[in-house]
Length: 130
Image 1 (tube, rainbow, N blue to C red):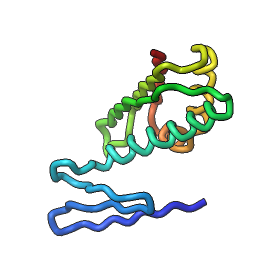
Image 2 (cartoon, helix red, strand yellow):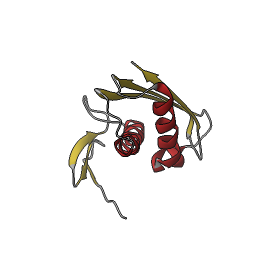
Image 3 (tube, rainbow, N blue to C red):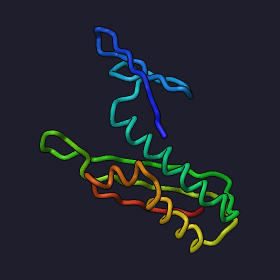
Image 4 (tube, rainbow, N blue to C red):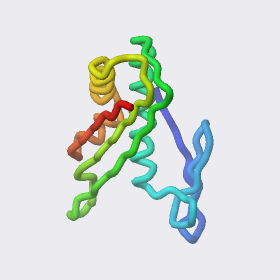
């Protein structure tokens, strides 16, 4: 499987990231995403897709799922991620906490972006059930 994005930058280093599914501004301008915003957003998107796939297979539903993800970079250069904190909140699920924890644990094992970042950073996943 292949994926491709296109990036175009103007002389002020402001850019557009384009993919088949849409586009986003990147750079320093208001409303634009910074490079680590894209990485952490990609992590959240991949983790959610993986988790939702697992929940669907187990016939578990919820009102909604949200993610709060914080990345902390190393001081050394290059400043790769040192720690990634992922707070996942599942609201009004129709399954018990044990089933949700097993699904969430499996999602962190099978999410390719999570596993890629885990090669350079300590991952700190946390599940909250409301």
